[in-house]
Length: 304
Image 1: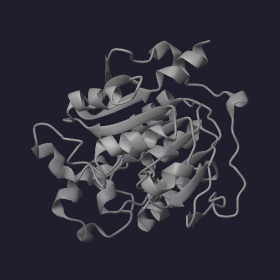
Image 2: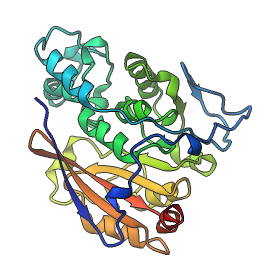
Image 3: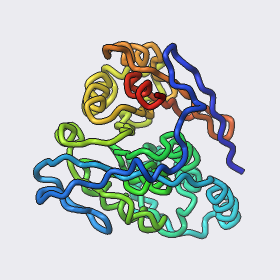
């Protein structure tokens, strides 16, 4: 049985969790803008060559009971599925250990889920990704570093449309393939491109960011420094870029991230953005930190 524990730390000015939107709101849907340069990527993959403003639609929250039932069912037939992506011997020893966790990463792994080597240690475990989707609620979502699609798939179960961006064509291919398995590919636009270059033309309610952490070696340091260890750019530039897209920014970060630096991000805005820090546990083990940043001016307008 998979057990997901969450410990939430509220930093001053943090958002009221009771007011978080976790249901659909049909009235707040915004359609994708029509343009010639960025076409629909539903049921396919498009490389973005030039940029136009993208608007997104909004979600339907779903219970995670199906995930739990599916994981329990598949666990009984462990080892019977086909190893997806490359052959088992093609992966390094450090990556092979992650295969034991494959049903935590994707409950429908045996249906043909594909992961590249980096995907094995970088994809968000499905119960945590499902939680992120419920927390992000019914607003339009951009997944800036989608990888093999773990988070985008869960967002699409709740949202009517998601834009999933990644610079790696292989990851976009695998993410699209995995979305088909979960039957949500019609709700996701997969964009092969650089998030930082696309950002000036992107618009949504929420931006979700799970940038490359630098591989499993992040565990070897006492404090993970978002100024020097995040790739391809530091966490401060990443946050500044995301703020220009949405009024809510969610960052999924290593469990040993320096919390003081997250507070610095919040205070780097004028007025400071509210910050909520959440510790994500899976089966009693701390897996990661999720930071929820919200523009207080937008929050006050929504409360009126």
